[in-house]
Length: 301
Image 1 (cartoon, helix red, strand yellow):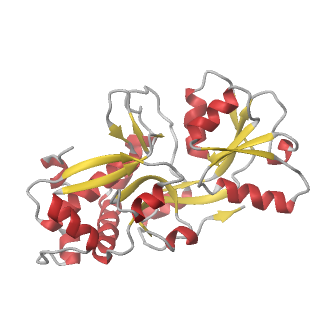
Image 2 (cartoon, rainbow, N blue to C red; image 1 turned 180 degrees about the vertical axis):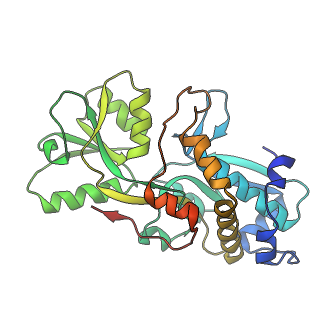
Image 3 (cartoon, one colour; image 1 turned 90 degrees about the vertical axis):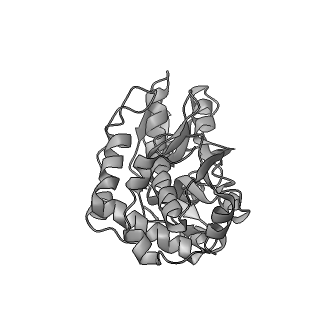
């Protein structure tokens, strides 16, 4: 996809001034983008409303639109007349490796900002706060994680849900059988088919899958974590890091981030025909008012 003029015009020269627009060369990642005229965005194939591929073949979503704005900022910074944007699917298990192996330049999905991940990659400003919750079939008497004793709990590979489950197992004498899945979609399908009794992962993804399901599924129990979600990229390119930080702050301060939130969380979703009607929480509202690179680490409750 080539970035169109309307998206390019949306990019403020603030980020250029911050980084020094006279610089002809970027860092490692920016050099490669400048030399090839191409930028690669990693996306999740079914992480509605953050990133997904529609039936018509378009890659769309809240995180995708944010990354497209960042790609436009990169194009302006490098003074490229054209920038080809490519999309590469990644999973929760291989997303970080895809950055380290330079398969993608930005990972645009549902990645929680954790200390362990910050050791490996750079992370942008938080654009959503999720929480790990439990999705089950209605009417089976499961109201919380403690009701999963001797039942089978689904977890998604490479996600913080595994850590949440391990903490609760240490704190309680309950024993859960677990089954790992490559994606939330696979786990919810297993729940619908009766192969597992519940799945634990980010609440917003589970909310979407419950809306799509022909079975009666429900989110139960309180949130078991606070998860600041953001995009990820290589930590070896400090100039790219400065550009991402400056442009994301501009998107917040200009009101563009609030507009994008309304589009993806409070309006009908492309080709799906329904809205999540999900109001921003207190933490995200604070980001809208006072954007900062500071992140309150994800926490298990």
